[in-house]
Length: 515
Image 1 (cartoon, rainbow, N blue to C red):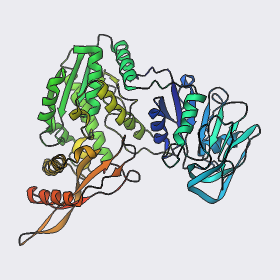
Image 2 (image 1 turned 135 degrees about the vertical axis):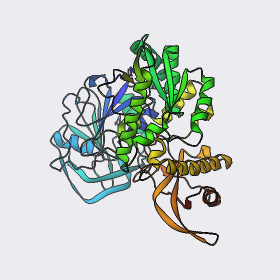
Image 3 (image 1 turned 180 degrees about the vertical axis):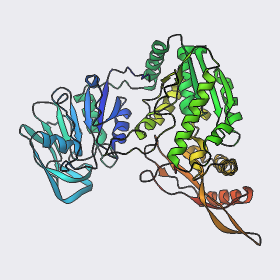
């Protein structure tokens, strides 16, 4: 695995399993400062490159016997540290303070009624501003040589600092929008206390990444699998800028694409100056999925089939040394378990490396980016809006939108349903208002009536969400009239479907995809 990133200023975020950890990263990135998330038990080597450290919250209590207890001795007093919620309580406890269970769970909005006027962390945060609390424990006594930075009506030690080094703790969450001046606090920590410069920009990323790719690849050849989506397209353009004709792109028809997508995507790439050829491997993928119902097994089978296809195709090109992938940061985060506080949400078909028999090295130019950052980089590279605005589509394709067994017949049904839904969104000028949309074929049948006949046919669910980076999402309030028209059109035109439902779940607790 080849990792690319050479930005000078960076923040390290240690994940204790909080649902907000990724949001902390998003907020730091919004300040144009690079950051990385690592599980608390896997602190990276070379961590001295980071100019500041943020400790996340956690579903654990510091009072639990098996609570996370990382060794922070290499950081405290060396680089600025900011503990958030659990992170703050952990800092207080390990240095001799006291943490106890709250009489009442401190959850929701609170107002700061006292602020240390000389606080560098809270500079510009006004008294009376709203903050978001989410904890069942509270700090009752501070370690020696610590000072209270702010208080609320119910929480005396809402935030604190160590007097002899740049270590801070806050019991509320500055990363959520409910904390009115949370970004001001993060600005202070990232810019003023950690001395990071706002150098994480699309232009800087393009320049740095292209240079890194040139150094790593040199004159070797790279094979890249295209999907037609934003991620793989941006990865292709970056690689093309770095190595030119030494990039070989293939677009695999896995039999699980949207209706007519194979032909349309190949046509789109004609004008981008890329060396692209298509491979129809639909029969291989459908065979690999035969009799597999479990969603994780589906993803693994598809991932294995992709590797086999790429291995076969790479053998036809002499001198290929690298396999490039459009892996992005949420793929990496969701595929890694923190072993307790966090759980692996799902594996991703493009995360995890190559089998031993393959000699290709993996290179992932976008591995450090969130989805919205990929789009901004694509815009910097001059990609057309029609490519940048394309909804995300899962790498395993429709296989994970078919609950239960995947057959050619069921794929055909879902392709037709999906085509009607997406085309209708475009015609109603709703497509660009939606971050991701698609249809799911459910493993159930329902009774219906068509004409004078009783039917017993498939149920499909429609899904449309709004999001920034896919880490959190909310369902889109599509007009009832629109949903009614789409439902009628699907039932009247797709043989085998007699019922349509609309998914109104948010992420969390649900995921965007059903599998």
